[in-house]
Length: 162
Image 1 (cartoon, rainbow, N blue to C red):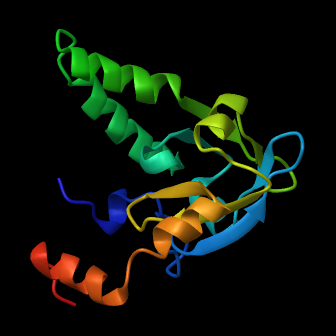
Image 2 (cartoon, rainbow, N blue to C red):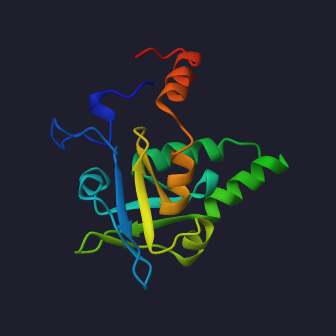
């Protein structure tokens, strides 16, 4: 079922809300606390799920996106080794975090290690109900590999014309 205005995580958040988009540079303190961009807090609420991601990042899920993803994992066959591995990877690497009074979350040490996060982190919206947390140096390296022309060609090959 396609998402409509009525069943999006932005319901009641105001007409200007467009989701988890943008790029924000933040730091992680010595205790593993990371500030969450205020525009993301408006969408995520007081808590959300953060998990191991692909490509060496962490993924921030709205509650709705996490439920959808969890349901898809649940539907994978338990008798298939690859399916069990996927369930373990994402299930063991997920944590519900709460935003404190200062707009920060405490990242679990295992997630910090997975994404090789250091003091400087970059938080990027993916425009699909999720966001990613990257080691800033790795983000610059990966993001620098995509030219506007390559992005346009990739969209065109997928049937998306802008």
